[in-house]
Image: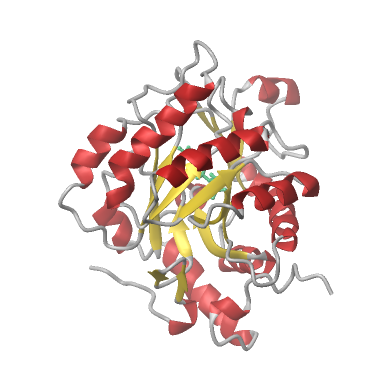
Length: 328
Ligand SMILES: Cc1cc2nc3c(=O)[nH]c(=O)nc-3n(C[C@H](O)[C@H](O)[C@H](O)COP(=O)(O)O)c2cc1C
């Protein structure tokens, strides 16, 4: 049943985790960890479940998902519905995931009012304590563009520092990634990395969707109507901006940096996955491509990626990572 893509060219060890290939399922698809066996059989090198919060949450009112098919995009305004950490922990108990499992954590969505600092810290710590033992790595979603009140909470790097300080006192046993809002503010990224340097369990960074609607969409509905659709856009329309962010972030990292980058945003083909790798991503994730192309896209991307690496005379994927972002 399982047709793993096993080209040795695609394998790497990151933060002590062996990945057979760099392509993973992005957070939000399997929010509650209900389909690990099936998803593993598609060929993914890792699966990220969640985002999961301390309490269960219904998410935002419907409708909260809109296709913009001409653009191969999805407008998403879910607001992180999930069953909550205790329920997901109970489901994962006794199951061995088929590939490395990332667990994405987010603060419980509360549209009524902004959370206090203590509530935010408590929420992440609580779900972390419940779920760490089931995870190969933890991905802290610090940037959900759909959580009404908490979207910009971690814009202030001091808040990230406070959260990591609390995590440090729990002595994380698995590597922790931070999924951030994409930005072209190099100063902010430098300050971020300076802050995370103090926390050895931070293994790297991921990138979430930018808030709002990018310009130049092909979709035929009027711009004013589009702006009224709540939410952020996933898929092809965000590829360019996220790649710019990736290039900048990779450039901010020191050459022998311990940080590894994980990137999603508009990857539909091997060429687009390869582009992210060359810009600095060690791991590439997809969501929207699964929706528009179906499950065979996973193997298509991996076969193609392996061929592209071979064409360009890379023996392993590690040699290609960041090659287009190194400043001369
Ligand atoms: C419907 C939907 C739900 C999502 N939910 C989450 C989520 O719960 N947590 C998270 O970190 N990212 C979430 N994302 C973002 C994806 O993980 C990914 O970063 C983004 O969609 C870009 O990849 P893509 O262009 O391949 O879709 C969601 C995306 C979509 C389309």
